[in-house]
Amino acid sequence: MENSPRFQPNPDLKLMDQVREVLRYYNYALKTEQAYCQWILRYTRFYGGNTHPAKLETDDVERFLSHLVSDRNVSAATQKQALNALVFLYHKVLHVRLDDKIAPVRSKRTKRLPTILTRIEVKELLANLQGTNALMAKLLYGSGLRLMECLRLRIQDVDFGQNHLQIRGAKGGKDRVALLPQELRAELLSHIERIKLLHQQDLKEGFGQVYIPEALARKYPQAARETGWQYVFPARNRSVDPRSGEVRRHHILESGLQKAVKLAVRKAGISKRARCHTLRHSFATHLLENGCNIRVLQELMGHADVKTTEIYTHVMQKDINALQSPLDSLNL
Image (cartoon, rainbow, N blue to C red; front, side, top):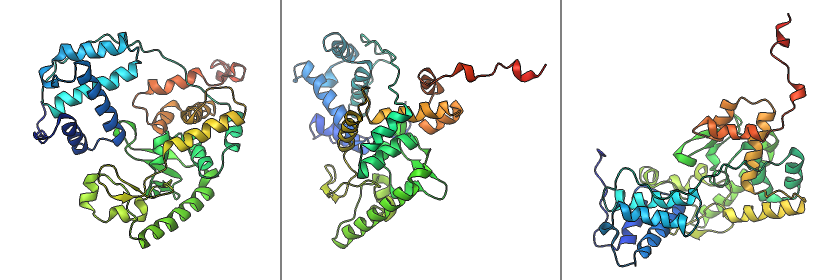
């Protein structure tokens, strides 16, 4: 049982407005908010749309989750997301306790090896990208970043003195340090100088704010206008924040780089099903092939469990002829 007082949504609001209010109180990401709301709506519609979820029980949750697998054939990850949304609804919004063990029909999780590009393929892919898209793709491969980690980089997260990137609030809410490739230092420094000029122009025009977490915004009211908080890869135009209504300059949309990488793969003649995340997989595999310790790689990737990192040992190039038997090193 939680010791801290629970947040009570406004009882006068409709259910979905209460859900959004609680999600924003706990500072969930906008994408998470959209996904959770979609699943909660699907859940209520599954039971006709007229039955309030508070009147439904654990068995009803199990029946809906089983339907997703049996009738909709969703993946294990999709079913888990739906479960998380409903657990959030009951625990955080309705304050109704579900049974500890929810046991729907489970989608079978199949382990698939990641797609890996060779070094030559990576080089050809990058050669078919230009401008900011090329710089971002080089960071995905050179630093092993996830797509959103790259887009959410702030100017203050780039440490040229220590040659690393500070990745904050990554998957699982964890911070970590990533490599800053020497190859990108000059290009990235020049890019950031241009972004600083863009920010100065925004300030002159009466804007210049960027999104920062609510708690920080309350504590440091002027932080949203500081240069260090600006995104390294800002959008071309300012836009209205869908939550606060403030006019801000957000980061670039992920779809832009995704489309550019997809086109570059085609132009490079690569037949593999490669995407942005493939560059991260390739970073990990190539580091292992270069002799990187798997525990060090685990830290660089931000994996909670080394078993997640070990999957790259199954796709790395292994030259058995180059290995030496431990007996040979004894010099008997």
